[in-house]
Image (cartoon, rainbow, N blue to C red):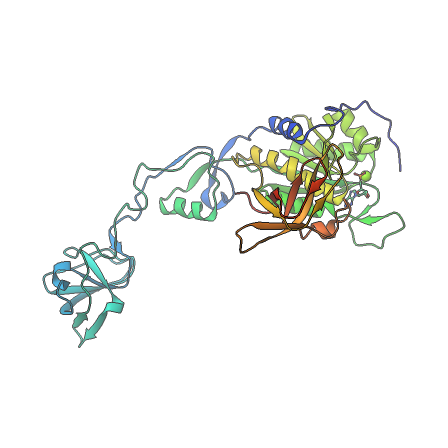
Length: 416
Ligand code: AMP
Ligand code: MG
């Protein structure tokens, strides 16, 4: 490997507790500014200001069922026969009122005609000849009527700042005609892998070479976190090239995620270049896997230097990069869901001053508890086993846990 000239590296502390590293990173990643976007492009983004309803939902009293709009007093002695005077589909305006002894055939969503105060569902009716209907059940006043404004009233604070625009939130916004939304900007994030050994074009591997895999994973994790991904590919261990790529990305993007070259004592080009052009802090975090981690800024743009070992890269992204990137996009919940699980087998470990993030498979059992057991291989290069994990069990320093013990588990999917 081409060696770069060693640079003086700033370490946060000989070993940094995870919480300190997380706080340090979060502090350096403020929320991005707000912009106005069309609702159709706002999915997954976070509201920067509250949305106040400017329209009422439903906009008019309407029927919740297909059936017959009636005067409830006319059906109080059901079964009863009424004259059907009109038919009303959703989207149509009533043209005649419902008088005494009359009914209007009505479809779900159609406005309640004048005179009617209830709807008898079609299942409780039989047509009699061409003009009449027999209603077999009495209904109270108001039956099957959805009142104007019983979902949303004008002036309601529909959604507070900080609300994520989920599919259902977007639908509610559509229902009140909120076409343009004030949201935090989506983070545009560059992702790159570094290393002369990495092959990403499908060509045969020479001795010493491996297939690039981290960038594939990180790009997908970034997209899953709601970021816009700018794929910078594999950058060779070449100082000039790496510097050019990083400087361009710092101008073009809101953050940079790079994998490889941050290990302790590793005076390779990543360290040399970042140490020279960016304001970096190099950390040894008291966790396993994913001990080495670097964070800094290049011209104000945050750079996450993740370790190259694939499992470490994943864990490092989950614990340090993802929460910070979500903060940048205005999210209030930054971490994955943490639950109290139960160990299904003994979780053995040795004291080493680190918190271990053991990748586990989990299952919700009849006892209502989430039972976890380690995936079959826990090496930081063994991504195949970790790829199928559901969660990471958080094992504090010590000698481990017996089967049946409570253990905190960080789910690897979802953000609740
Ligand atoms: P590094 O952090 O660069 O010292 O790399 C640590 C280990 O991870 C080495 O075995 C690398 O070959 C491997 N590695 C680094 N980057 C990648 C990558 N993008 N995809 C797969 N493995 C990688
Ligand atoms: Mg490397």
